[in-house]
Length: 162
Image (cartoon, rainbow, N blue to C red; front, side):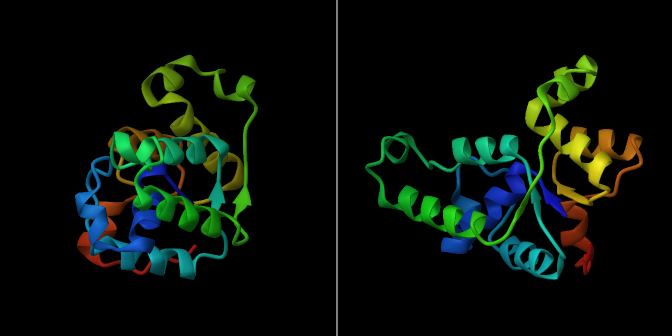
């Protein structure tokens, strides 16, 4: 199982308080009630694969405002602590060489490096991806990868085990 940066961020913010998901300035398309579903998906998955690019994106999205980014807001530290605890819990890291990611410049220019890494890892590992990103979904489907848009899981209350 591989979560894109926004789905992972929604989970990490929800670890502190699910209501914070809806109010977070940098999470679009996720709500407080989604935390339980993401937690359930993670608990039912045999493993969670993460890329360094996803981690970089999540770390850039965690601060709620400029005060938090400068370290004056305790909330930011709580998210950071939860993130570190979560990341230390046995997640599998996978990465692709930059040369592999820039091979198809058309995909890279449309998706960016983090999402291109998701496509490459999904192809090489055969893992399922959960995202709310329409462009990423289309690229994964075009390459016959297992992908599900989170809003569809939410609407259908799907049990997702991979």
